[in-house]
Image (cartoon, rainbow, N blue to C red; front, side, top):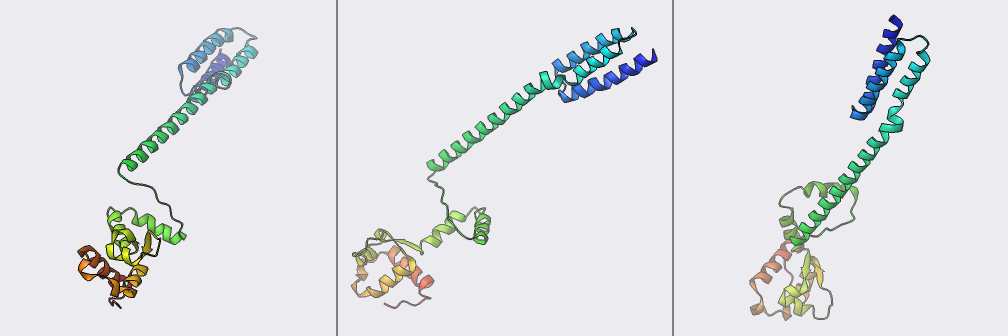
Length: 202
C-alpha cells in the first residue's frame, strides 16, 4: 500500500495547486475533494493507476475549462466599474468647478517653463498672484473711462500693459485729470512702475 500512499500524497499536492489557481473557490475545492475520494477507492485495486492519473490530469486542468473564465469575467467587471466610477468623479469635479466659476486654461510653453508652472500651481495663493500680475499686463479698455476715450479709434477689447502706458503718455494732453478715478490713477502708477521704470513721459 506504500505506492498508493505516495500517489495520494502527490495527488494532494496537485489538489492544493489547483485550489491556489482557483483562488480557493468553493467549486474548485469541492471538485478536487470528490476526485481524490473517488481515486482513493480506485487506488486500492490493482490496475487503477492509469485511471488515477487521468483523473489527476482532469484536476490539474479544471481551472482552464471551468473556473478561470469566471475569474476573468469578474476582473473585467471590476475594471469597468472602476472606469465608470472615475468618469463620474471627473464629471462631478468639472460640475463643481463650473459652479465656482473655474474654467480650464491650456497654454503651450517650453518644457522647462511648464515644469515651473506645475510647481507654482501647487501654491494656495496662485490665483491672487496671477490676478495681481495680470492687472498690469492685460488691460481691459472698457474698464477705464479715460483710457476708453483715448482708444476710441481702436477695436481691441484688451491691450497689453506697456501699450496702455504708451497710450496714456502720447495722449496725456487729452486726459481730463479731474475725471480720473482713484482706481485709474492707481492703474497709471502701477504701469509706470512696471513698464516705465518709474518715469512717466506725459
